[in-house]
Length: 195
Image (cartoon, rainbow, N blue to C red; front, side, top):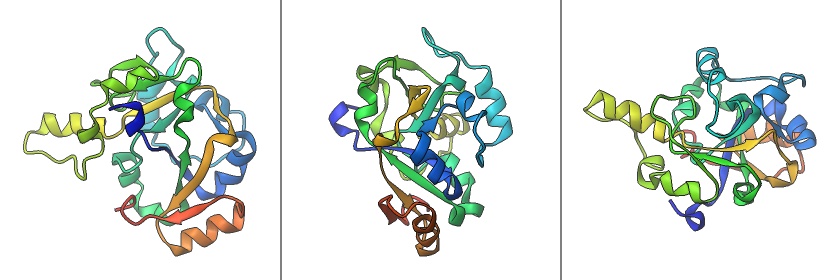
């Protein structure tokens, strides 16, 4: 994937947490531990990620993890709470910040490769990352593809609110909720993202 092909990044979050993020920014897992917030993270996934150290970098928990494609297995697993979550749209300019790292798949998976940004985007397989489905007859290929659709941009510590350009929601009810708590945030219903 090239830098010019990267249109935006996504961060999946409860709608109720949006006002705090717009005030403090998107915090790394470690920093978020010190701020009251609602989390939709799955504990078994977080346990795996807690043990990961980014090569020539910090512990994974010290990075904000932004998805290159927010339409992925993480979002799919949250189908039952779609009405209460949104995907924050993040400007790709964060890729040019110091010490940002790119992954070619989920940073907590056994398949992941890490590479410094912005040239690290070269390791991302655009076709597989943005595929409509990750299902395959071969189970191992399916697991790898599922992980690739969760390719990440890792930003140390915090993503400043100025990089948040808007949000996507699943339906008009969610849009009303988001407008109620974050009236100045540009928001759009995006049914495809939440399929």
